[in-house]
Length: 365
Image (tube, rainbow, N blue to C red):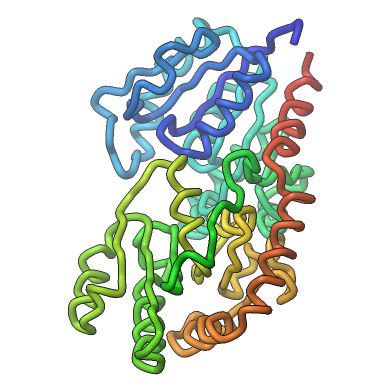
């Protein structure tokens, strides 16, 4: 690309989503600067010539929540970074934190990407946070969202147009490579953090019902991820004597997720709230049939039950019913897996998402 656009990205450098965007932009010869509240946990970008890490976090490193005051303390560092990097565009990923500090600079052009809880939860906590989000959106020259439900939610806070650019799936990384005929086990799985909102405990309880109803079947449940509910999950496993049935993998890097997905027969994601459903999209790309809750954020991926099963609610009983349907119906699983893959490859290819984002940048050149 002749002009080598310089994009200053305000985002968590350790997020797999941030790294996906950065890696793709680097391949297309964009000059990238990253301003992150946290230190990079790896040496991933050490040898990249087209990337500049503009903020080496010190006292703010590893904080689970950055207070409003901390935004202002970091603000001078961001101004220095802008003077140093001289960006063509500033792009903040996450409207409630990075979006706010980016908006304070009054730099133009300024793009904001909303990811989920920054719109679904943040402005509903109090009046101040609602005003903060409105300020960010007022300052933004362009607004991006990952799903239809986020676009609809944003309409409560701004009259500006929002561009839907989903996270998408890298089909060169996420693809089917499991030989299901070689495994005697039937494996359900989750690739979500072990947090209350994702109802992993209810998945465990539903799985226990399935094990008790079908004691002669080789059933397994694989949990990929970690979080604050880990001890509670471990307690449930011990209480129901499921140690030989449930595999707790813990947190893994994003490039290891395809391997774990391809060990599953069914993926389960029954979140209470969901803005898109990246884990579901990745499973669909691997031709793994999926069970999702009726959260509105899944509708872009699973609009109806021709591509996956949608639970009536997130109760243990309704999760169990969906699990049992897939367990007993091979033909339905294979049909849904086929339809799901076709939908992902047609509508949610990662390269298509990157091209849409790059087109927004190039509008300013």
